[in-house]
Image (tube, rainbow, N blue to C red; front, side, top):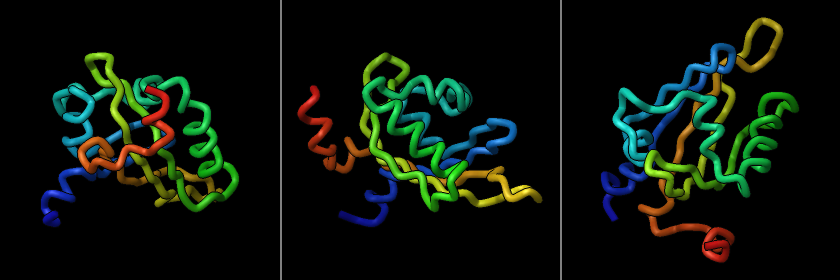
Length: 127
């Protein structure tokens, strides 16, 4: 596989945690069935996490924000615009803190596991 093909499976994202503003690579919108200008906001993205994956994803994010954890690292399913689910591996890191040391900006990458052919076995068994 070429590097170019592999990079098409990874998209960057950034979250201003204070304002909840989410910015991301256009591929993330495309994978979820949205046009770039209609990508959902942070709250909608949280609501699109599959119910079986929601608690573990939120715990990982909480650990990143409150316990000094180094990385948010989770496999989960996100609901697309059409209502189907796609499989992703998402990692994020706190990249900026305010003067009190609280996280303000999280930056990360999301991998479309369906396009890599590496859907985790735990998801294969649930469908």
